[in-house]
Length: 381
Image 1 (cartoon, rainbow, N blue to C red):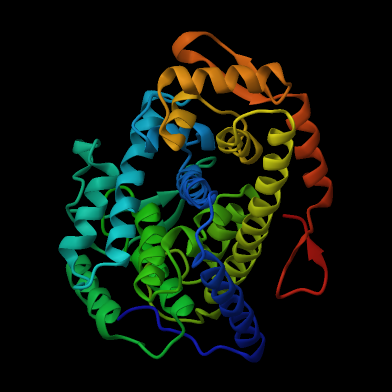
Image 2: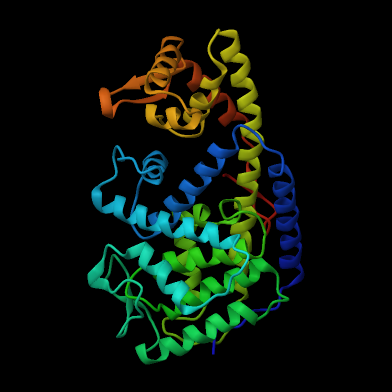
């Protein structure tokens, strides 16, 4: 027996309508190709990876995650964190492919494979293999048990039940609700010795991707869950729904409502970024042209607008340039006050110069607060 899908109340249905309207708008706007699309998608993937891994205590900057995604050495992330990020990035890449696969079916082999991709570097934890014994989730500060998973002999049967539900259960329910329940049931079953939280969040993204909500990077709530205050609420809600031991009973609506709120907030954020991307790109094209610089360098400036820093290799790959061309462009941008270089040779990177800092500050001042769909008052992004 699994945790059951709840009936939505009028307030939840209203929030769901707003989410779907925003997603349809995003899908429509993404149908038209723009020069900034690739960088925006990469940024969203990196932030999703950052969010899901930060929940587990693996912290890395967006810039370092983008480097890891491209197979480059990060500037700051430790080897330990880099391995975790690389494993999760591999699994999410597979999720993106599965979301568009013409022939697809959920099965236990798929879930085990995703778990192996995430934590395969932890061979002592039996990656990709259902746990042979009990599992206890402890409070990191007190050491007390906050959740006890079902007994090991029950896990294979529970996974079979979950897989059958993923393929055939509650197909008439809204996709966001099914995805939330997939997340809840997998994290409560806790089938593996490690990676269960990340697996559950990735499964939620996969369910939405398979239902063609939009591409995984535009429908994931992993970035939103990774915010400190949301992470605390996330753990609180998981503890509240289902209690401290496996027991598929009780009201699951609070969990679904929590997920709907996260989807709404993240959709607002992504919509803002998409609008901002077009506005900043056109502004930078005007400024670069006025400075007599090559318009291709706008992609370098956009990168430091959305992130903290840029490496020459990133710009070179984005624009298909030689090393010399990329280095020359960045030197010119630094000479004009757009970029500020730091470090030498392989470790060199660029941060916003005074002119870019002024633009970033102006956009930050004009940013609209995000609206909590379940509350009258606004909340900050």
